[in-house]
Image 1 (cartoon, rainbow, N blue to C red):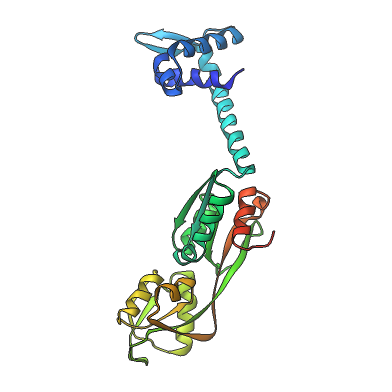
Image 2: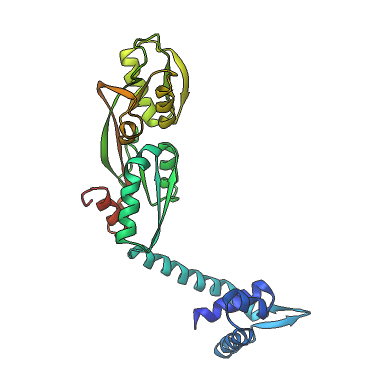
Length: 281
């Protein structure tokens, strides 16, 4: 049984018209009618009946619809599985903004050069939100801050960068604890590490504001609105040359690639790992 013919039948049932089904599939109405006739000849039962101005499924067709829909769904699933096994299809990569800044250009360039058939979707969000999306199956991979808990054995986290955490000031700004702090959100994974580093140096820091946006914090510090404790991601020096950075001993933020172990052999995941300099799992 030709699955294309089954798709035409299902379209006719859903649209209530052979002409509408033909338009939906990009074929002529005569071709659609021929497909239905071929199915009826093969199954030896009528499948469509005119109901006033519309076409409707016959009782025999109604009985077959669940199996026919499953057949079409199976075909779609097989196509998706083949796309996963080739350098094609869709790659959904979630990332924190700083990781996207540091690693995104390399990923985009390498995929364009080596796998132009891959449709890359970059989804920026905070690490925890990206992790939840990945865990729920909404992402294929993630560039995030190392989770503050043990990962299940089904997941693989490879560290890409160990970023020192330190005091960030404007070069023409005064020093000392009397200058208020712009705090990287303590609710975020990276921000919690920065807050621990800050409070290891200052017992009661004067907080001017708190946000989960390190690039904006860096800009505010450069504008003279305060000082901050931030990780030293690549874009800090690239885009904020008016800032000084003084590392706090022992304080580090790890950023890495999160993938599923079961997909380690998937070609597009293997290519992504190579792009980022990650050894084979």
